[in-house]
Length: 288
Image 1 (spheres, rainbow, N blue to C red):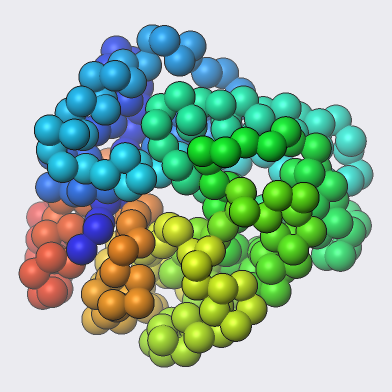
Image 2: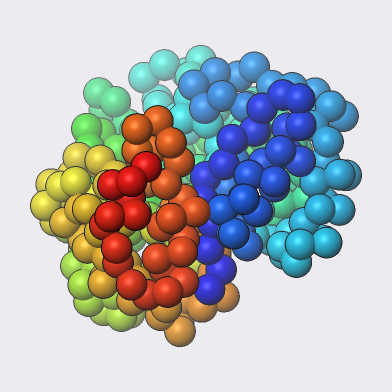
């Protein structure tokens, strides 16, 4: 099982500290933001202890492709109402691609964005136009994330992502990150995950699925709200999430936990242990 979680990246050890945190959870994958998701302030690449992090990953057997970067929330390539927002998205995303490459990661997860006060089709068209202004690159794949559909979000149907990818000048640079909480909230039946994969394959193509966010949901299917729950403590349930983690069709894809902290403590070591054993033990999480 290729399993990890969101980890912090902070001074003084930056990426090296992120890898150490992942290893403390007995993970063999990890996901990080290159800085605070809510702003554009970033530490210079040369200060991020990237070489030391890569060496530790090598020693620990973590595949570089299993280190995932997540783009910040402030990037909204779907906003056509405020051109300066789309320009910020373009400029900052280009820098995030550079940083992803410098860290040695291959996959950069990106929320498609929100169309705000226009309409869905305008939002999709704006995303295509914005992303197509980014220069061609070879070693990073942007993974558009499946969304829950709250507000004016784009990406809560596979067809949205397929249309965006089809509109790219370089579609080979784009893939998908599938979030279990999001697709359940969007109305997909994750209890029939093979059925979901069949539909994904028909609409997008399974060869474009590179990352899975493995999260339970606080909401009923189709609620379109996007509120993550800890494994086994939501409406999806541990058995379904375990079955997804073990599904042979996505065996080679890293699964990343983004579940909530419990009593201000990360639950990832405990949740990873439960996934590895296949046994749900709520008392482990209650003890945090």
